[in-house]
Length: 111
Image 1 (cartoon, rainbow, N blue to C red):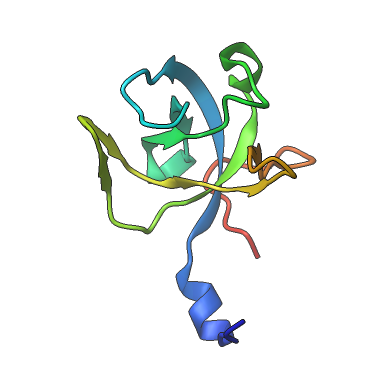
Image 2 (image 1 turned 45 degrees about the vertical axis):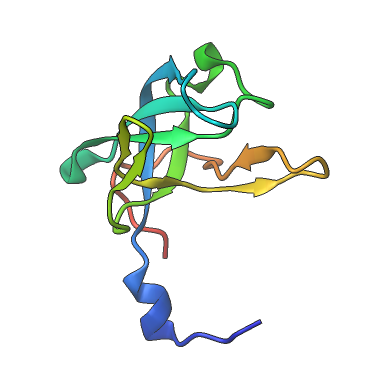
């Protein structure tokens, strides 16, 4: 594992956001949803998330998550992903979201 400096870590914009809407993404190669997330002053952004194994669309709405908001946009098929949804792979390789245990303002930076 390569070590990084504190300055390297500070460059990553890990921000809290609330999921507003979730859509099916049947065109994705791996099962995924499209999520619409409110990042407060940073705006509302869309992303693709391979989280269908652990979450239904209905239970995701209103959940606060952590996203990386300063990566370049990424084209996924005909869809443009505007941030990276973060999570951890379980024993089967399915993603479990990085979520908050309490409520914070949307757009709050991980510190």
